[in-house]
Length: 360
Image (cartoon, rainbow, N blue to C red):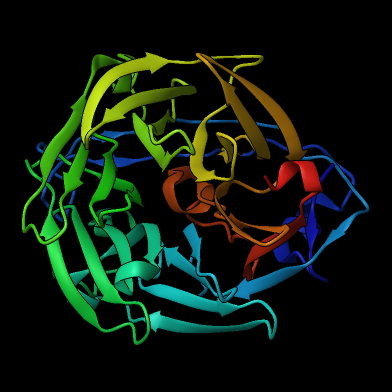
């Protein structure tokens, strides 16, 4: 079942004539060099995913994301019902007020030297909007920023003004997603390395919080660590994109312990964002087109589908009983064969009503 977000789907609906099956390619690309342009030192790991998009009649509320090259990647929310969306193609962060459908550029492209924005996380306790920035200018990403490396940026959650920039360690890093603990320490997944990094509250540099071979991308290539969130049990949970795994990192007294690869009732297909609910359950985005609820019991998890056939979903944020999903359409950004084709405009975030059992 294909989601029809809003009243128009632009070139996508026109080309597909609402009724046909098509292949869609999703590239998750990691920039493993500080070089802006392609060079022998620039190593890019690409994953190609094809899936079927089918006709549907259901309409789903949606809100446009400004920018003809927005390619929204991550989405986060605040308790007052405001959403923030990072843009890979145009850069910068968009603020969305769902009750008025108002979308504005909140963090300007290039602010604090930023480039393509991936993970975003609203930390209301410190009034900070955290964002992962990576230099993807060689692939058509924003050229307005000055950074040549992967960095975690902080912005004022009320004004959007830049605060700090923290470079990830090493020359081959890729900041992907973010979470924050109760003490204000920030954790990020490094998709290019099998490491979860920690920026302690008040610190100016990262520590390696957890490192494990299970976090690595397959030897055949692709992306490693992706989504990250704390469970209600106090432990840290992460996804690996290409391998399709969900893992738990035991946390005790602020330190990482055993890493456990969890067993599911089915294999996850390119799990991306991970957002905590309650009772050790999460909302999970699968790059193959799905929004799921995952419930963890011991070393196992059960997946319940909520909605499918999004066009390359990249992230999810919950406001009450509504899940907002970003449709990235990333194939048009990362796939060289689609560079002369146009994504469906405008880019959108889609609202999915959650049943009571899927919101806790």
